[in-house]
Image (cartoon, rainbow, N blue to C red; front, side, top):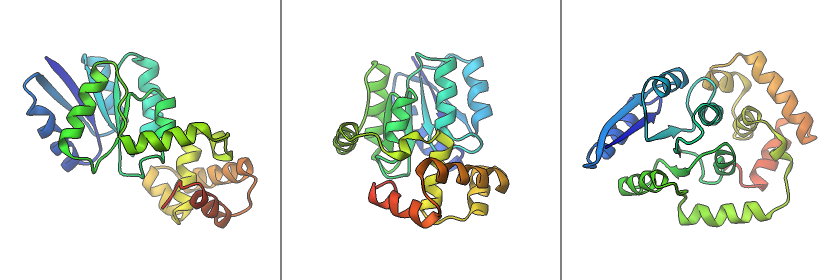
Length: 208
């Protein structure tokens, strides 16, 4: 019997995911975690067959949490869920050890299909995302590839038009910390302002 952990900070989302997975006859337990601390605590105290992870978790964020999870439990399959455009974080998620990547707007049956595939040791992506990833892999390295996970997250939020204070609140970090990230991002990207970042992100389809 399967034990699956859902990591998402939205109660409604967790409830919906839990209901979908609980309807499977071979699923014994569906656990819930609201933040990175709860995720790591549950991973240490229970044996899970798979984790369904929201990429926009509060605190350290889903990608950084994924990195830590795979460091501690390298064989644990993780399906990453996102509300972002399909290819925005996909490459980074797979580089950090994700077994699957799908959009939260996908139909319920696709979630079950994805979980079962990663449980069998496979990788799951939608056909549309697979085509995008193939294109990205064939392209030469881009300036944003040099950003850390957190820098990349901040860059996308800046490019989408959010202020430093709004980003700080969303990521549960100080305004000073976000400003420091912004400075590093501009240096690494060889840019001088947010407008250049926004143009770059739009050109490379990183934001819509």
